[in-house]
Amino acid sequence: MKTCLASIFVLFLLPESAIAGPDETTQHLMNDTASMLDFGLLRLNLKLEADNLGTASYNWEENRIQISLFSLEKGTVESAEIDCANWIDAVRVKAGIDLDAGQSKTGSSSFANLFTHYGFERRSVMEGLQGKIDKIITLGCYQWGTKKPVTIKAPLLGKGYSLQK
Image (cartoon, rainbow, N blue to C red; front, side, top):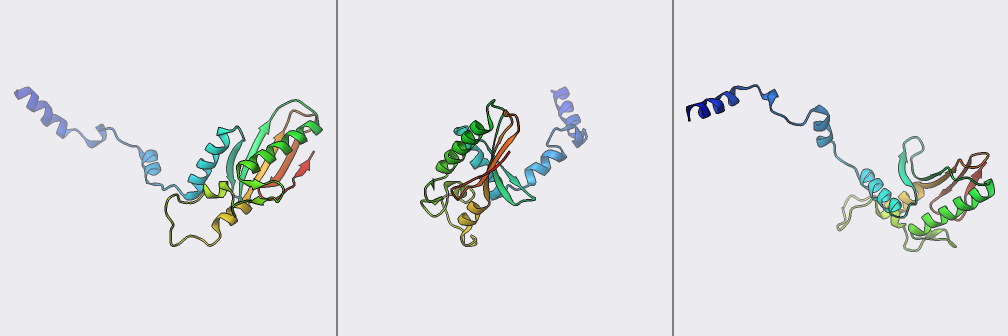
């Protein structure tokens, strides 16, 4: 019993650094808050990846939420353009965009809704936030399996796209 008590007493005398815990990096991550941009990108990526529609990221310099698809599939420039155009249509449909009108059927895309709070409304919400989010979402399809790389870009809202060969 005396040795047990002595052992416990010695443990209390050990320096605090001997006890494990979060290091400086982990402490920083624990204290840093996630933003609605962080949550929105996570939600958007989960939604896109569920249907193999690419990935989403934020481009700081261009102030754009970019949805991208990268492919090394072999083919011609023409087949790459068709594949990318079909992908753009699929992403727009997933977002709830009417392909004939080039606009959302409900006023804002389902993608923009991913960047907002669920289940409650805040008093300090920016007016027209979801519509503004829709305007900064862009789509980019990059095909490197052709003789020359093919890049097709389009806004989420709208009907067309631009081709760069």
